[in-house]
Image 1 (cartoon, one colour):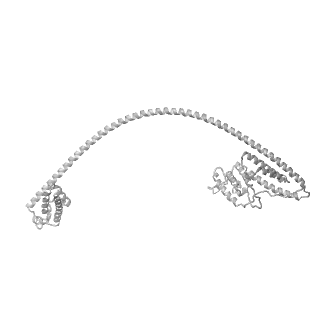
Image 2 (image 1 turned 135 degrees about the horizontal axis):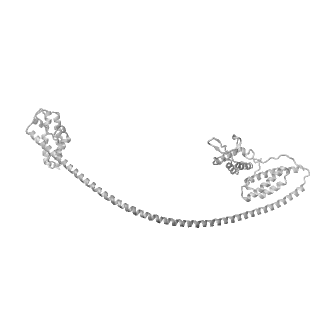
Image 3 (image 1 turned 90 degrees about the vertical axis):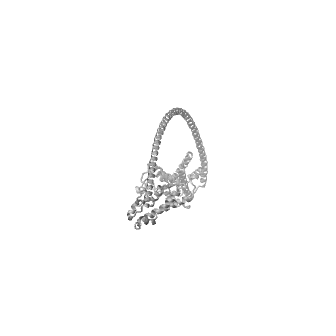
Length: 460
């Protein structure tokens, strides 16, 4: 029976070519595969080549991506792996996250799958291999040309690879995606072939039922064989696990014995080291004790020497200070005696000259009188007359400092001596001038001030 030889569409995601969408090839660098990272210093894509091994891994991942829905959540880990293989090892392995985010933005621009053109399917992780083997056997009876037979052979290879990978516990996501792809493609091709058969003349339904019974029998037999193979694989896996467990226990026992021996050796070494350190510490302490004793002896001798020297130095300083004090007291006493004598002589001279002046009134010009008048200052000179010097003279030179009564009488007499009204009677009418009047008034103010102080002391 002949069939139409029309081409059949292959399964692929619309507008989804990972190599183009993800910009794997660097067309600004001759279209070769270079690092997909960004070189900030050059402000362009990195041009470092990818080594052959990483290019091979990257090509395998790209082929797996062709079979996946670009909008499926399972595509993200594949992109992370692809970024790791297409970034240069030297400079840009730290840009994995940035590169994957850029790829995800590019993928988001692709059109979504439409339910009218592509059948809804489960994620590859949900595959039930028993059900899939039934589908594979059913599809085998619908094959009618070399293209579908080649696809079916590939489907059987993928299914067997999945079973082996499941036993080994390795990753099977790409194989599962390819299996789903092939199943959908073969189902479409098989349905078209079935329609062509039913359109032919003289379709043999009895033969079809016989073929169906034969296929059912083969399915049961193959299912039994698969179950037996699965059990054998499980038994092999359990035996392998048991061998690994025993080997692990043996290695752990060897390791335990080795560690115990190392512990005993280490304890013996530590014991020897401890004894050596104790001996060394005892010797060090003995040397330290002897050194401290010697240092203490030298310190005491030095301290006694310093103490003797300090005492001798202090004694010399004390004697020198005592000598200086006595000399200072002597000089002060001599100075005080000389000052006292000078004051006594100054007062005596002042009193004698005033007595002489009172007994023998003198006349002359104002200039002559300023030099002749006995002024109440230590020097007796008119040039030294001011309130400070006059007050100092009366406070220190007068002989009645401790007798307020006599001091009051003396100051009362001084008020009479220095009153400006007495100037004409003693020195003549033309003797006074402004300068002499000011000098007399200066002395008069001081005498009045001192007399008031003495009067207050008498009243107290």
